[in-house]
Structures are given as C-alpha cells and as structure tokens.
Image (cartoon, rainbow, N blue to C red; front, side):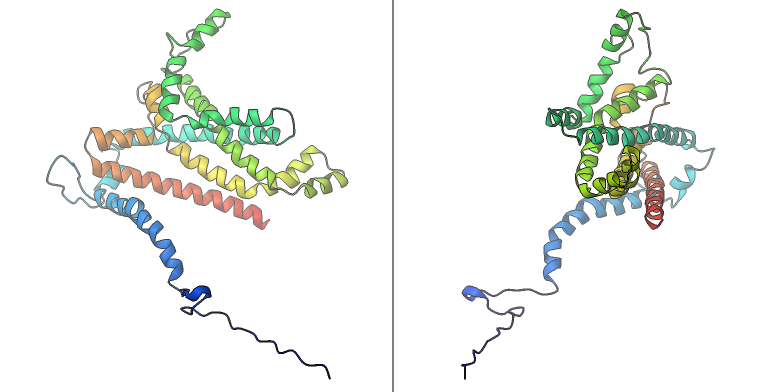
Length: 318
C-alpha cells in the first residue's frame, strides 16, 4: 500500500496575528479609514469648512472692515430676485454674460478637440510633435494668455489689425471694445487655449476602444460614419460625460480672460458672474451679498450638471 501523504493546511493569519519575521499584521475595519484620514483632513480644512463658513457669511451683512456683522437671514438672496435692489440688474447682466460665453464656448470645446483627437489618433510621421503643439498653450497660465492676447488684439496697436490692414482688409476691428467682437475674442482665445486639454482626454479614450470593434464594423460593411456613430461615440460616452461637465463648469467660472482682455467692456457687457462677485465682495466690501451670489451660481451649475448626467444616463438606458 502506498504511503499516504498528509497535507497540512495552514489557516490564514487573522487580524493581529504574527506574520513572517514575527511582525504583527494589523488589519481591521478601521484600517481603510486610517488611510482616508489624511485626505479627509485636507478636504475638511480647505473645502468643507470654507463652504460652511461662506454659507454663514451669506446670511449676514458682512463687511470685513467693520466689527459689526448683523444677521439678515435670507435678505442677501432675496435681493438677487428683487428688481428694486441695487444688485439685481448688475447680477443678472453678469449671469447673462456668463451664459452667453458658456453657450458659445462649450460646443466648440466639445467638437473641435474631438475632431483633433480623431486626427491625432492616426499613425503618421510627426504625430507626437503635433500632439505637443496643440497641448502647449494649455500649459500657460491665464495671466500670460490674457496679457498676450490683450496686446495682440489691441484695436489701435495690435498685430492682428496691423496685418489685416496690410493685406487690404479692415484694420480697425474693435476686438476688445465692442460687440460682438469682444465675445469673438473671448471665445476664440479660450478655445485656442484649452482645446488641447480636452483633445488629450479624448485621445486617451479613443485608445481604450478595442480595435476589434472597428474590424467587426468593417466586416459588416459599415463606412467611416457608421464606425464613428456605432463604435467611437458609444466607446467615448464616459469620456464625453466627463468632458462635457468639466467644460461647462470651467466656462461658467470664466474670470481671467474677461478681466485681462476686455476688462468687462464694452461697458459691463462682458463682465461675467465671477467678475461681479469679486467686485461686490472685494471692492464694495459686501461679502454677504457676494457669498449669496456664489451659492446661487453654484446651485445653477449643480442643476445643469444633473441635467447632463441625466441625458447621458438616458442614452445608456436606450
């Protein structure tokens, strides 16, 4: 009879038992929370606490230069909807300017980077160089972009008008001082500056789509449009959701371009909501009213984000 071999099964080490080398492995339900603790401390200090404090400020007539800051409840919020208040017309004008900029910039920042990513996803000589060229402007800060284009598009001394006049075209276009040219400038500069970021995100999403799906589409006799519609767009749906929400939020919070290039001109037509909030809070010392505006803008953006999420969810369900 063959000798039977005894197999000894060693039970896994339990929480607190000694492991190799005599060291004790400490695992338990609190371990995950200990790893999360540093992030939570930073989040609570720099995000949660300021948000709660800002909400508290919005309920007061808050002038940080004066000792008295009386509680006014929801009066700062009511003033934003009261046509007789001092901030009503300026607030809604700035909100309208923000809406105009977002309405024209977001579609361009969704479509142009996607077309660029589709082109850069192909194999051709110099592809890496062109990827770097299109992304390079995004590395520059808004101060650099604003000052640069402020001088380039200056109606009197700008390079653009000088070149246009030299080739026989109108050389007196008010790029930064009149409508609709001020909006053309703000939207054009923003698209030029930030399209590289969205293109890189799209490009990463395109590279995650399995090549087998495109081969199957070709076998089925589908052309380029069919591949784009039935393979590329469904494969990019999570990326499209991220890019759409991010682009809407960033566009709605536009400040630097308008502040540096047009300075809100003509008049206050291009003064965005963030510009007006900064003016009310930091120049007029009405921090309570500025905080109320900030939370109202946040609520609007939250609703828009939820609508975008709902649209993509319905597409997924269909």
